[in-house]
Length: 350
Image (cartoon, rainbow, N blue to C red; front, side, top):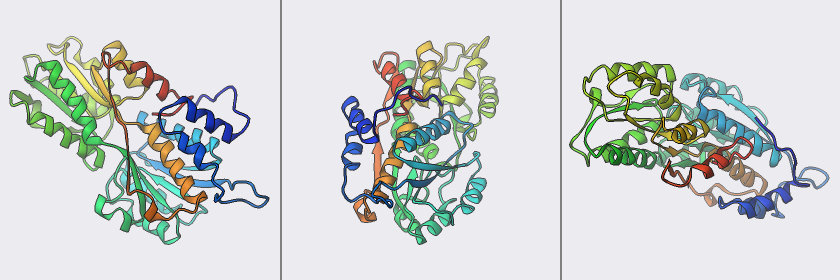
């Protein structure tokens, strides 16, 4: 990950400058870091914290960008990050987290690959008084988050992400024709919400047919997505109008399969809105993508976690859910350059 060439003279000065330069709520960082109630280390200095983070798998762009954001903001806010890679395997993720529940940790931030899979290690952390933040996906179903030991859910609205991308797709194909739907993992709460958003929009367009009858789950794996996509292309001799694919990685992997087929003019939309996907929008391989703000999710989780610990906050004073923005990005939307800047590895803001 690229680092900044120059650094403000102090962390507080950096945060003040950040609050002036963005509209992303960073002013709260500067305000919070002025709190007189912060936990102090011997000698009166702010205590360096230690936090465990885990997300789905670092082979995906979304998770790698989130990892980089947590590391960058951890350095800025004096929080040591202990990273646990989920390896796109819910069982492995749980087993790895079970190995760290007895470590010296101040707070934890987890993106669960499967709802319910991490409940037991989270409950063990809760018994030790360690706050746990659910990032992007549900560690437990929403009504059971608090009883499972989760303090708050910090995420974008996955249903809205799909509604925006699919709505744009329908507009571009004129609300008629055949489309393909490639999904992430069926056990992933965000993917299920994207399916829900897809169905809501599809219900408005009776002249649109989904090739193969419905979503094809590909577990976020690009090779599986490409192979599945190719098989679906073969099911139609007439041009397939469009495709909605659950993340940019899988969508970009599918694009080359269109060459030399009757489907070359297919309109493809996706979700994530990170640099590779934004490049795809800029060069026309993707028509649009909706931002799932991975850097903001990981950064905000770290910021909230350190506030909880340093300010001695109570769980009942923290919102059960903190929603984050998830804008649609297309060539005509006018926000492409801004998203490139915000998602740059030097900034890790969206």
